Length: 229
Ligand code: SF4
Image 1 (cartoon, rainbow, N blue to C red):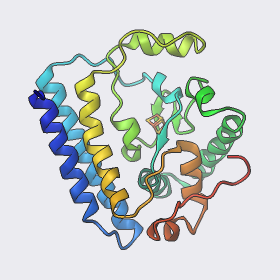
Image 2 (cartoon, rainbow, N blue to C red):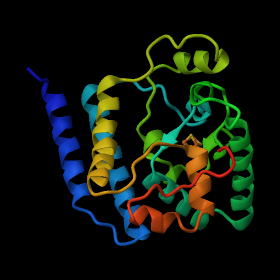
Image 3 (cartoon, rainbow, N blue to C red):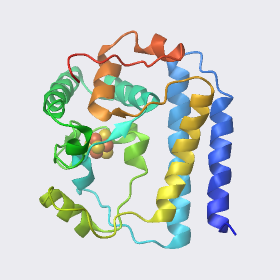
């Protein structure tokens, strides 16, 4: 018999999928708005699950081990994040962020995705131990909670060692996925691209490829690979 929490999360996934499938975003502004609303539901559900289960989380301000991992996001996340940079960063901050994104892309291009996962490359948006684009961060970052700072620290300090120890609470993880993956599945049903892209690649493309918007609305992959990124 399925446990009641799992049943509820399956229902959440189905609801998110149905709602997203019914959307036919006429423009990118609508896509961004709908995605930000999804982030709100994701956060509310995870907060509820954390309160209900009483799980002790290890995440705290200033801790950024997970911002040194490979992060994969979808096009709708990249559009929200790019818009955040354009509207919340000064022109100088945008130029500096773009330079850091490109520097990271050059480093990442040398690695396989598997090597990149724990290569210890700090996200280009990480500044002084905190996310400089916190309000616009993608679903992957929002739904990730650790239950052991020791596990995160050990993985960061010795990237060659196998990952051992507790890392995530299963119910919190499933709650985040129920919303984020249900939403993505509904957009996919409606014909929109939901490929997972490496964060720097997708963000760079969303910032620099003017036709990404049109390609997305046509149901195509919005981001075109340049060089070997
Ligand atoms: S977008 Fe922000 S939260 Fe996500 S990895 Fe980068 S710095 Fe960390």
